[in-house]
Amino acid sequence: MGLKVAFQMDPIGAVDIAADSTFRIALEAQARGHRLFYYTPDRLAFQEGRVTARGWPVTLQPVRGDHVRFGEECEIDLAEWDVVWLRQDPPFDMAYITTTHLLEMIHPRTLVVNDPFWVRNSPEKLLVLRFSELTPPTAIARDLATIRAFRARHGDIILKPLYGNGGAGVFRLDPSDRNLASLHELFTSISREPMIVQKFLPAVAKGDKRVILVDGQPVGAINRVPAEGETRSNMHVGGRPEKVDLTPRDLEICAAIGPVLREKGQLFVGIDVIGDWLTEINVTSPTGIQELERFDGTNTAALLWQAIEARRAAG
Image (cartoon, rainbow, N blue to C red):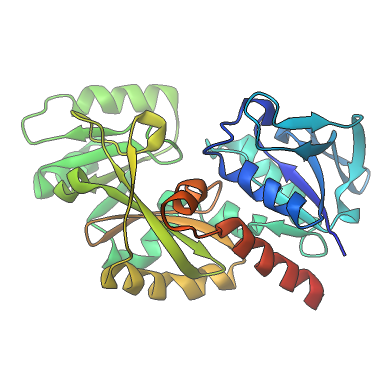
């Protein structure tokens, strides 16, 4: 029997259908006979004990420029649906956090993927702190003296916003760079949040590996190679995806974090590995499944739906 599936996501009309993971997941759901409903996060609401969303039934097709057909706009009670996908991109701000609080009210009767409680409590650059033996030297601080001391210990560093995404605001500061104080002033003038600083890993020149896990199990990886003259490897800023195999170290990292992800209901996760080091655990809106499918034929979307359908069947 088909499931009623709602997608909370960024505007669907603007997605790149050849790269967007949410579109691929939704297309797979449709192929499996599930009913689709789409809405944007600003249309999620709490109304007198009900968690509602105003949006549209949709049908999808893999045709660029004509990939979505909308039904009549309507309001639904999300408690009456089987699955809600929490798939809008960060930044992980108070608007994002509020959606996790609202969706938590209907979970797990309505299965929210990923579990909104643990999405809220496990943002990408913070969950890795539980696995310090797997990560490069890392500090989270707002105080300039603390960041300077970290840099004095490690020399070449990466400085970035704690709740950013897509490579935005990521800076490499080598020992001769004199911009740390200016960047700190810039960050602190626009945000009250601390920053994250990590020891720079030269292995990033060979790529930043995205390893995809489904229900705690690794299913494959892609390598994202920085563009010429660029430190960041994110595909949003010109990183080039390449086919890559999982190494023994990748599997060791996945074996360490997989049970924690499974326990916390994080069905779809993308971790970032540079060389031998885990740098991020992405639980909000991970990407990369279309590239993986093109490289080695792994249908991650089908694996995700198998896991979800099994959970719904088990009650």
